[in-house]
Length: 193
Image (cartoon, rainbow, N blue to C red; front, side):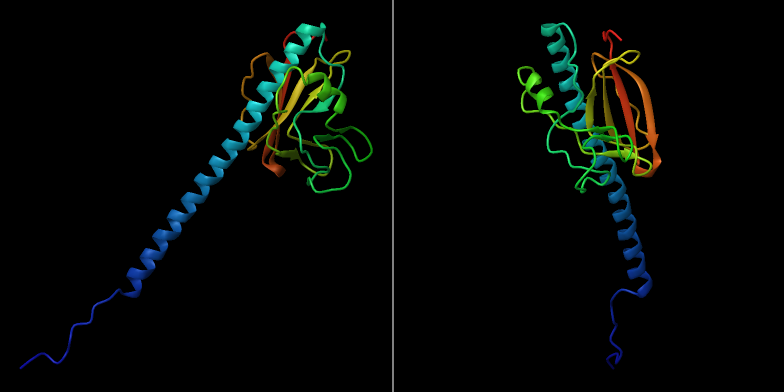
């Protein structure tokens, strides 16, 4: 006599839950890896741009006897304000609500046009703990009495270390947990100040 019960096959609820949990774990690992890769890519873009600008500014000094006396954001397409979507505020630095705004300076860019091609632009990472002060991308800060000519630049990741860039001495590193970023200051080794 044939068996009246036919054997049913399929997955149990427990087996399905195990599969869902494994997929969730793999997705979480992928997101962490992707975030780290994105951070490294942004930082590589900034370091490359800063390196190119540092070399161009040094070539300018060789031809002209001194570094440019103009402060400027380095690169193009900066946006204004802490969020980068505001109508006012600095493009790459703002010290207070009413002063210390840094912008892409057309005169500086014209001075540098013979020394650099295509205006390499850093990643637009913003560093700051509140609305002011904030820093974004990279900028050349002309030296003055007691302060050497320098390039300040922002990297993603509050624990990121400032890399060595030829011709610059890293003298300052400031971490900003609120924006998960760090601001690096590279001073020109042969600056007169």
